[in-house]
Length: 362
Image 1 (cartoon, rainbow, N blue to C red):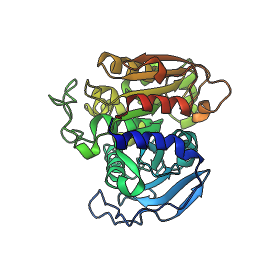
Image 2 (image 1 turned 90 degrees about the horizontal axis):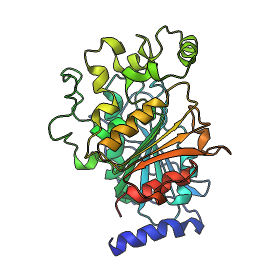
Image 3 (image 1 turned 90 degrees about the vertical axis):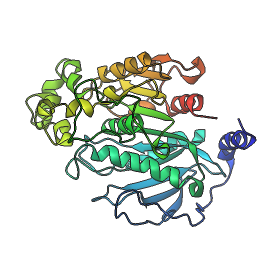
């Protein structure tokens, strides 16, 4: 560890007692990541919030509606701070994936982490792989603007919940590469020989997935007893996650079961490789929307690939982030390739920070 990196790591923890000031960004220009994207005001709407500094309403790409927005929350102090690039899920129905960024930051900023919460296109605004391209563009924006925001470009994790967890997984595992829906590879050939050639600026150093779908074709049979019937009634479907009108079909732009291999290409489980980033997975056993088995399947694939990985199986957890602050949040924890100090007996933002502390470069 260099003296600079060591000092930055110490300052992350020590800076929490400092006063909150305005976010100074040094006039760094926003880099547009998609064709025609305008440069937005980096650092505009900079405010102090919950003992942290925030820069909201930034634009990482010119996209429809609220897609393309990114809000940055940082600890006080000089940094550079490791950063969690975050996307909230909505079944790909919303373009407001930045909406709970402040809540996530309230959990992680006390542990010295910045949070960059971003939105992607909804399934009405774009179909696969649009959302993966957006998530990758958000990571790229964070890295290109890291210096002005006092972020550590070498310590970037991507994360999300539900469909946002899927966005994070697909961006982290593929970097948006080799996802051409016009040239879908045969089953088992989703990853080219040698892996996805992810550009360095699009690579992340860790992935954190909260109850995201990982294998669309196995979801129905993993649902809790009665959960598919309830899901059908709530969403006016007949065949649960495999329905032609399910959120998965909407995101793919074709029915899940009639996609000609696109469904498998869009499943994170198909992209886990030995060179994939370290992976933290969190899922509640009482989830009636995305079955718990999706995360177990992902963890087993990560373990088999030799990744540094951990899986928090939360006994009382459902399909929301309430488990992060609930009084009852005990978890069974599976881990592979990470030390015991990297995991806790209960799930919390502190536990997430401990995992990231253990796996991010130092």
